[in-house]
Amino acid sequence: MLRLFITTIFVAVMASAQTFVVEHARLIDGNGGAAVEDSALVVQDGRITYAGPFADASIPEGAQRMNMRGKTIVPGIINGHGHVGLTKDLKQDQAYYTRANVIKNLQIYASYGVTTTTDMGTALDSIFEYREQRNKGEFDGARVLTAVHGFTAIDGYPTRVPGVKGVANEVATADQARKLVDKLADDGADLIKMWVDTHHGAYPKIAPEIRTAIIQEAARRGVVSFAHVYELADAKQLAAAGVRVLGHSVRDAEADDELISLLLKGDVTYIPTVMREAAMYMYGSRAPWVNDPYFTRSLTATEIQALRTSFKAAQADPELQREGASDLAMAMKNVKILHDAGVNIGFGPDTGPPGRFAGSFEHLEAEKLVEAGLTPMEVIVAWSKTNSRALGIDEDFGTLEAGKVADFLILNANPLDNMRNARAIHRVYMGGKRFRW
Ligand SMILES: [Zn+2]
Image 1 (cartoon, rainbow, N blue to C red):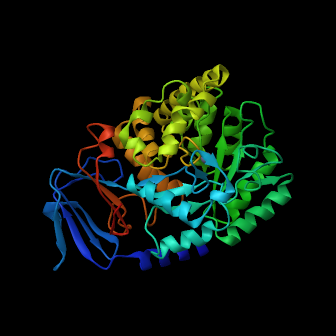
Image 2: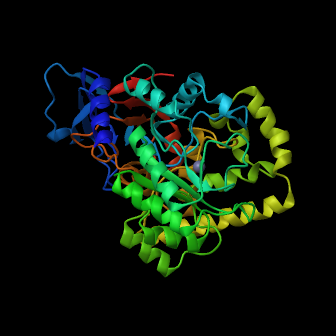
């Protein structure tokens, strides 16, 4: 209840008082139906009051009218798997988790059209303050939904990843886990995250009965549960236990009928994070995006230099190359299998940690999912309707329909022709307010 209350308040506070109409653009509303070729999008006090054919619109008196013929409106990107504030110059450290770094991160996200990001379990408690400041309009940038401290086994993944020790909740018993879920819910966490991964055999995994306790306690408290997963058997166990979101691809085996039926029965959302897999090894061989100005524009000179030298060298290891290529290939195969079977496919590349860059990676993810076999329309539905449902924010966010918050992008080109056209962002609006960068 508390969460819904907070959402209502911030939307009201953030609303831009103005009434305006975006006219004659192509409208893709996020529901997956045909685009409206000549549309009107009417925004009043930060919310959409009409989205549909221009011919059927009634234009409020005194509204500001903007002719956007030739452009395309899409829902703002909801990033279902991201991290915020912990990384600087390709290094993770809790010392970097400052207001300034969090704001910079949220602004980079927004500049690429990400209007909401998640912060999946590697935050410090100060995120509550920053989230509130953002929602009160003290600074502009992507909205953030946070899991604050994710759950793992004692010494489990990712506790030995630099900068993460002490951020994750390392739990030994189901009872301890339940109490910590309660604390997070009381504190105002939007999501509950856990890691279920040996990371190629390097870490112990959290025990199945503890995972189940976390999922059940999160459900009891009305908070969305989210699991980082790698193995098919774990994906099945988590789905059977009632997890709401699987935050990575199954990468050890092909998705089978049992997994499909568990995901469908549980209405579980599967977020493939294919660019996460690419970023785990491709810097060591060829990472074509490193030479792409759309990607490098948000990077510091230090980061670009490191990607081409030390970061590249660290990923050149042949074993890592082999594992990475195999993981990515399986991820690409499984998203297609699960998508074709009708499973909810969500969206989010696991941006934020070193080598996975806010905003630009969302676009690379979209393009990679098309390569995996989704259509551009299906990718847009994944980042809007499916993600808003998965994250429990669909009452206010996701699709472009009357009553929803006006978080949308105006593009210079049609993404249905080519997913890359989503990069051509003309304007970003959040709560009916134009974001400038
Ligand atoms: Zn992650």
